[in-house]
Every structure is written in C-alpha cells, then in structure tokens.
Length: 379
Figure 1: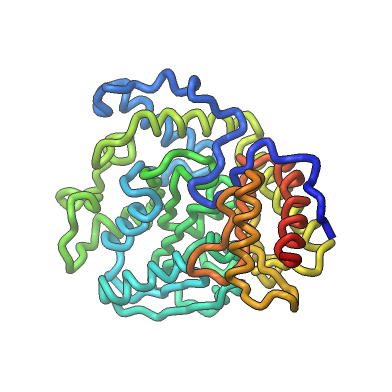
Figure 2: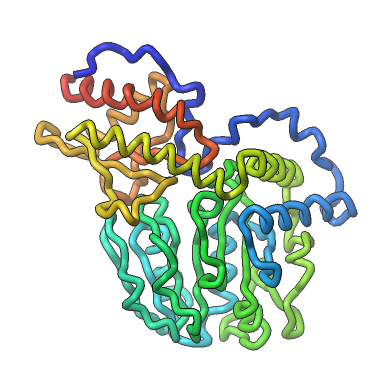
C-alpha cells in the first residue's frame, strides 16, 4: 500500500484529453509575432494561414494533390462540414465504438436521414472494418478519444473502393501513422495532439473527395459556413488560407509555434515515439498493479494518446463514485488534472499521452495514482 505522499510531483500536471497540454517549450512571448488587430485577409495574415497549412502537410506527409483547409468550429465543424457537403450520393456505413463516433451516427441517421448501415462495438472493443461495404461512404473515428481504442491500420480499406472514407482523426493526427491513400476526408483540431487553442478545425480532402464535391449537390440546403464549392467548383481559396470565417491570428501563431516544436523533436516520427513512450509507461504500471487495467481489450488497438483505464478491485462498490474520488484526490494535490473518464464512457480514468506530454511527468504521476487508489480504498 502507498500511504505516504510520493516525493516527486510532475512538472506539468496537465493530462487532459482536450484541450491538451501545450508543447513543453510553450511561452506566451513566442506569440509576439502574431498580427493582432490586422485583417486575416491582408498579405501577412494569409501568409501565416498558408504556412500553417503547408507545415501541416510537411509534418503529416499529406500528399501534394490533397487539399488542406482551416475551417471553423474545431474538429466537430470540420467533420459536420464534410458529412453535410458530401454524404447522400450513396448509402453510408456508420461506424462507432465510442461517444464521438456515436454522435456522427446520430447526425447521419436522424438529421440527414441518409440510408445507412450502423456498425457499433462496446467501449473497449472495435468494429471489424473488414465487414463494411466500401461501395458505400464510410464514416469512422481513427482513434476513439473516449474509449482508448484505435484503428491498428487501414489494411481493411480497399484501394478500389467506390465510396468515400470520412475519418475523424482528431486524437490521432500527429501521434499515429495515417494511411492517406485510404482516407478521402480527414479532420482534426488544433487543441488535441499539438495542444493548440480551440475553435479551429482542419479539413483534408483527397482528389476523390474533391470530385464528389464538384459533381454532387446534396438534397438539403447548406449554410454558408459549410459551403466548399461555388458554381460547381471547389472554392480553392479555402485551401490556401482564405478561411470561410475570421480565424484568430493569435491561435494561428500558437499553432505555428506548436508545428515548429514538432519539427524540432523529429516531426511525425518523433511525435509518435514520444506518445508511445508515454503510453508504455502506463502499460508498465498497469502490469505491476492488479487493481487497474486498460479499457481497451486488445493491445493491438490500444490508443497511445487517450489512454483509458478502469479499476478492478472487489472492494469497490460504486465504480463511478470511486473513480471520481481518485481523480479528485489527484487534482487536489495538483499532480493530475482533468483525468476522469469521459461522461458517457464507463467509470475510470483517461490520461492523455500525446507527444506534448513529457514521459518524466507520466512517471512522476503514476506513484500518486497508486497513493490515491489506496487512500480512497482506506477512506
């Protein structure tokens, strides 16, 4: 039992799964070059936005013929924009193994009312992607942020598919190797893996997605904020930094600084290695303690960013209350903030392990988790 307080505290106790920890080198002074009070349509503003797009392309290895746009309303706005603009041309395959994927199912089935087949798996499990009909459009999350379950790879997605694949990759981009040839629409937000500021989303389109946009008109009206075409042609300016609505240039500068840091740690390969090391530190801890286990059942599909844990001890009579109490103890000690499980997920903890988190902080926090568990058992 761990009855005494551990001697070491994390230098940064921020383990939230969104917004996520800033890069270790973050300093407000680094944002001094932001063109505040200037129009984002001025040359400097457009230059910054285009730099954000092209540096994203460079780090993630996005193909040159794919379009990358900065859009409003975070990952949610980007994915909604894609669904409302492109779905309906053919039936859909809706895939969900956690709450955000379930949200996309609701939007397609109940709001857009598209003919759809729904495939679901319980928290901790994943849908068998080989069972889908890829002649239909397929919507799925790459990494289940609220379940800690991710796609192992894109092998199940055929190269000769007739439908489009729409992938919500918000907690996967910059931490996992995404197979761009298997993804037609990919979305993520700045505030996830790179710890950027909220409200800005990224929309990445393959040539096949662009073709759909230019040759298909949905049956429903599209609000201005969702419109990606004009006169049957893609609005190219959106993918060159001419955003649909006004972006925060302070947030843009913050994202640029995060991208600069990402390059300094080895780009995508370095970011993946950092996340893997963080997740492995937790795996080692779980291996050594029989009262805690991963929510994700299969190590092959276990996330290296949103690591979800559940307690396994016969002495716990109310799992939800116990998990909340443990999380509160850790927050009160300022050693782990915002690590309670997502509200719709099974009771437990969710520890962010993306590349902006230092492995030394994970290592310093885990003895405190041991202490908090035993303190709550003894309470």
